[in-house]
Length: 198
Image (tube, rainbow, N blue to C red; front, side, top):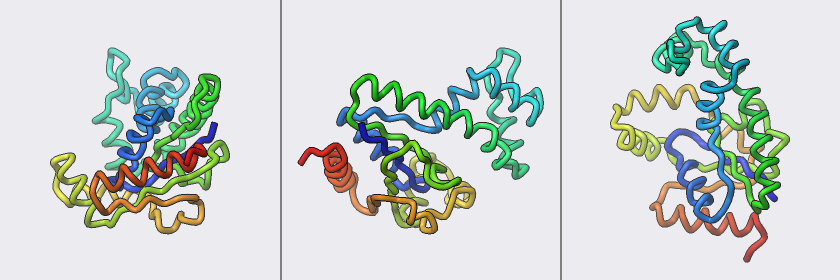
C-alpha cells in the first residue's frame, strides 16, 4: 500500500482530488474530520483544550463549543497554540488509520490536510501531492462555495502556509485552474500511476 498526503491552500481543490480518489477505491482520511472527531472523543485532548482555552471550550453536554474555540484561537492569535495541542493527537490517529487500511488491503491511502507540511514532511507518507491553483481562482471558488465576502477568504488564506515555499517537500503537483473535468482526468491518471496501473 502506498501512502499519499494531499495538501494545498483553501480553494485549491485538494478535497475534490481526495474525493475522486475515494471513488477509485482509495482509503481517504481528512485531517479536519480527524480533528473534529478527536476533539469530541479523546479525553486527554479534551482536558488539555479545556485547561488551555477555558472550561467554556466544551458545552454542558460535552460537545465542543466551536464559537468559543474559534474566538480564542483565531481572534486572539492563538492558532499555533491550538495546533500544538491537537496535531500530535491527529498524527497518532492518522498512523493508526494507515495501519488499519493496510490490514484491509487498500492499494492507496490518502491523507488530506491543509497544514500537512508545517513541520516538514511527515515520515509516515510515501508521497506528497500539492494541489495548486491561482490566488484569484481560489478566492472566487471559496467566496462562492461558502457564500462569504472575498475579504473573509483573504483573512483565512493569510493564516495558511505559503505553499510555493514548500514545493521542495512535494513529489507531485496538480495544477487546478481549469474545469472540474480536467481535474478529474489529472487525478485519475496520477492515481493509476501511483498504484502501478497503466
